[in-house]
Amino acid sequence: MNRSQLVQSLGALTVAAGSILAVVGVTATANAQSSAAQAAAALPGGVDVKPLPPGALELSAAMKAAKVGETITVRGRVAMSQDAFVKNRAVFTIVDEAADKGCCPSNADKLPETSCNIPAESKATVQIVDERGRTLRNELSGVGGLKPGAEVFVIGKVQAANGKDVLVINATGLHVPKDSIPNGFFLGEAPPDAKDLSDARKHGDLKPGQTITLRGVIGGGKEPFVVGRAVFTLMGAALKPCNANPDDRCKTPWDYCCETKTDIAANSVSVRVADAKGNPLRTDLKGRVGVKELSEVIVTGTVVSAEGGGVVINASNLHVVRP
Image (tube, rainbow, N blue to C red; front, side, top):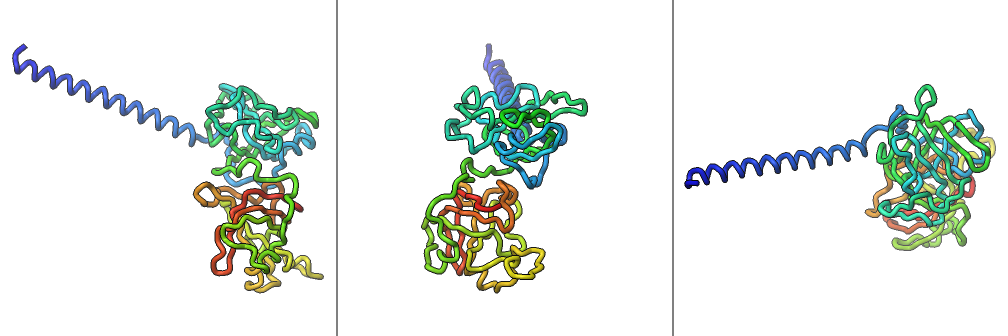
């Protein structure tokens, strides 16, 4: 082979190598786009619900109350197990987070084959069916935010129930929050040594960096919840909502319109559930475990700000005294 032929051969090899790299690059990009598309794909059957549905029952309560043929709304979590989703079927298992005592790993790479030691009375089956009642042939793992451990709200018709350990729901609506409230955030029992919010503020107990447990009522404005964010305003006992006043006919008694803005500010704190970076989670708190305006709650958290008379607390758990 002479010099000219060698140069031509090397040039051809370079072009070929470039073509191979281009193909590999296109394939890698296509695979990445495919994975992203699957994660962002809409749920089948038109069941995707954007706003958080109100009045959701915790799963254990729904297991006891559900009747075949009725429509219910349930909050649960996708089981942290390999069998949480049925392969090639629009079927998955949800569990009551109160029943998860930490036996299931948070690491999705080490999922057990089955949903650990979650009792049957704390597990339900959710399925999406067609107009004839046949289960859709769509695998739901990774679709619409559904994955092991994901918080999910289910609206649907009860297909099977026995009031104890059987519940099958034909879903007509599914809401998967952009950010899930941490597992274990809601406490079934009241934490000890809770202080009234007004007393804590009066005695200067709310200082940045301090962890404290406060008792109060959700209110302080016409919209005490921040829509689309895990944030609400909590009021102390020194002030009473409008409906506590005789003959009051206020349509929004939780706004404390009978009190001055100065007094409201001095007897309230802003409570939020934040991520690792300190940003409020992108989901609503209203509607979970019966939480709404004028709910009496106990919150444990850390004071992150107390500037200008306003106090902000990052909550680590919450107990509902009175929904």
